[in-house]
Length: 114
Length: 116
Image (cartoon, rainbow over all chains, first blue to last red; front, side, top):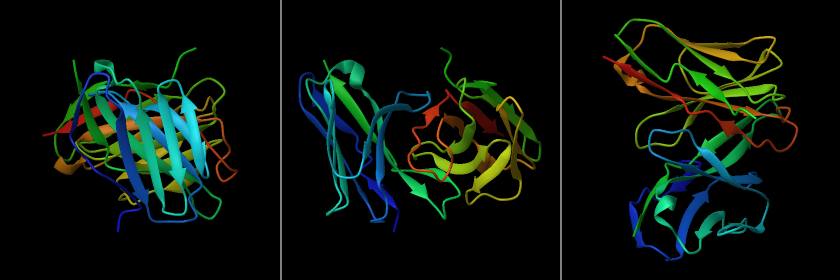
């Protein structure tokens, strides 16, 4: 079983739609969760960084963590064509206190149609 | 302020050759990590360095090695290249001390390596 599972999509929505992107993870010890946006042939860009459970909002983006079900979500309101990218969820693996290693899902390819 | 920078942008090598990739972290960041991203997959952790010491290694063969310099820049070396080493190699830097809580990591644009 992969440590972080993510539906690869692709997901296609019309401009202005609310987008919901989701991931599940296997290790209940994970505490930090991130969402990265990656445009084609570019490096990942940190969008949201959350600790433990709850919601975090930043502009049109909301990150949600449900530790009881090991489920993390990213919502994008009023989606724009410029939001078209691959969205990667990630958690921080802390193994024996020696390292902080990002563990990524496979990424979901999002296309927002004008 | 400059973000994480990587060089070269693109590289084409032949099987069996050796390659060196370079990374400069964000100013003030002492932790550098390397990731490999194969097309259609999420990045996979290769190494983490902090204060010139290796602090973590992913599940990669010994053909992969790295080092960090006193100015916190880093190099990733891959020997005896295989076709399967073709990927986007990403460098990420962080302010956090490894193993001490959280660590927002910021990525560079990557080096796209093609092995023929």
